[in-house]
Image (tube, rainbow, N blue to C red; front, side, top):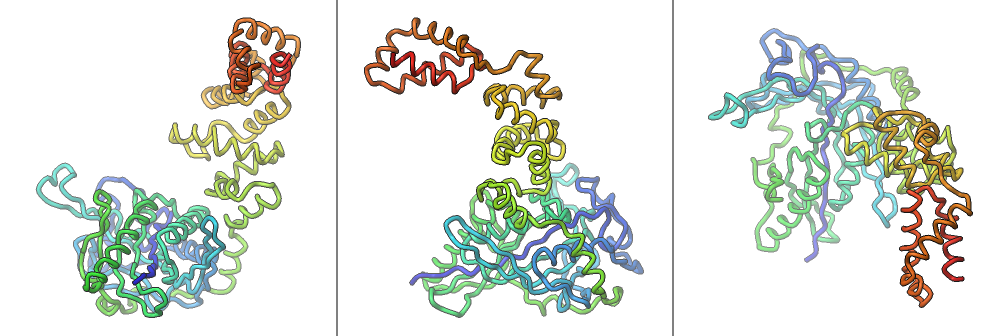
Length: 480
């Protein structure tokens, strides 16, 4: 029997607010344990929550960007469960009346057409604290609770079970990640848990309409691990069914070291949490004017900008997707093209030398020491024939390390490209005279030797010789 996977994702995006969702404590990551707490986020008796307006604004932005309907009336609820990192004994979330409902995102895999993935809901909630175990000084033989993260604002984004493979799940997750970081509402740092995913996975016989029993894989924090966890879980469930067993509804954890999921606990249902409206928070009413204002303030979304780069600037689909991976990179690209209209050359440099330098130094594009105008002027020098592509890399390294105008660097260091045919011809004559054996090989039909001669000429000219002139003169000399 062949089986069809059915996958739905629940994504938690930590919001980039300066303070928590119901109190004024800082949300800064990595501070001393329990240093960013107050009676509200510690759940002390008598402390009352006050909703952070910025959280609502970010939720509206996320809803609009994912084609959701923004609810005029939404309600906060208490989700009751007991765990050491949940000081109140309940989590303030939303249940029956979330802020955003019934949206969608389109994904596209290579070689396939677009596929629409439904979004059931987006709701606001507070995060729990964090259990700290024996790898922390002073806790060698036990565990501690760090409540700095308690009450940190989250959006939970719940998809419909429309995903049918691990590749579709990763494509959807990447699209969602791009949107929340593009909007500036989440930093998207998966290692720090700012963007994490629960995957609901089940299998059913191909052709069946009856969904199988699902298992939920909790808190997967990288695209690679999401793919591995889903693929393992699909195969685990298929093997279990084929061996005569049955899938149990449960929560599982993914172990990246073994590449396997393992049972954590039986899966709770909504009624197990005993949801009820939070009596300390009044219903949230969002007027049409607030939504309209948010629509006007919404930036051009990444998929729209990607399409514009394809249609207006002639970029390939791949280049446009890479360039729009972040708002800052797309802005940098557009600034470059405003100075010099060779969009393809700009994208090549951004995806090549610029990205390499950023990665090597751990620098963000926003802090790139080579500003857009400088990169554009460098590309202009290449396009005009003033310098070669190889020399341009040397100039770029100098700009990266010490700054400066590319034209000035070329002049000061004597890096201008040599196009004078007489000067180049003299170098070629010397190379040919010194390599008689290779000349005979070329004239005997071994054309690959031509590359050897080009390399020797470029080496002798220290990379300054115009490659087009070198190729033309060299070919004429060798054939003559």
